Image (cartoon, helix red, strand yellow):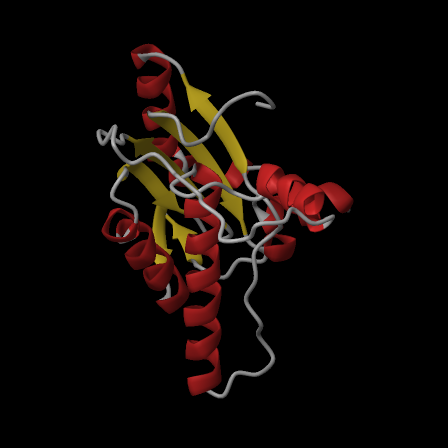
Length: 187
């Protein structure tokens, strides 16, 4: 949402897709996700988000073959954590306008965008390091740019999204992200 402050306390439903929706994280068998090494890395790092962002908690989530659905709860109880920026410069240069522009479009500390960007970055690095160790140079893991988010506004919506996440593996055959289904549509 354009006017929403994504540092604000609340529940956020996110979907993050792999580049080209390639199936890096494992496969669905009998309605259950079977994670490979990449999927295990994605899961481990997802669960570590609160260790790096004290305002974040992980709620329901699922790692799918080529995407992740999860609920992140932002709950920053510290009121004294205002950002005060002081400058040592006496003169304001032309760059001040550029800096103001970049500060408006850059992800804010402790924001949902910062959390997701950090998660995607470390995931990419660790998975590609694993591939290098295994001498698999043909595979280069990556994410699609951006991510989908939805601000969860009430308990009924939260419960519905939790149910969707839990049931996602069982719905894989009909999932829009399923590579096999997309290939069938093209034929």
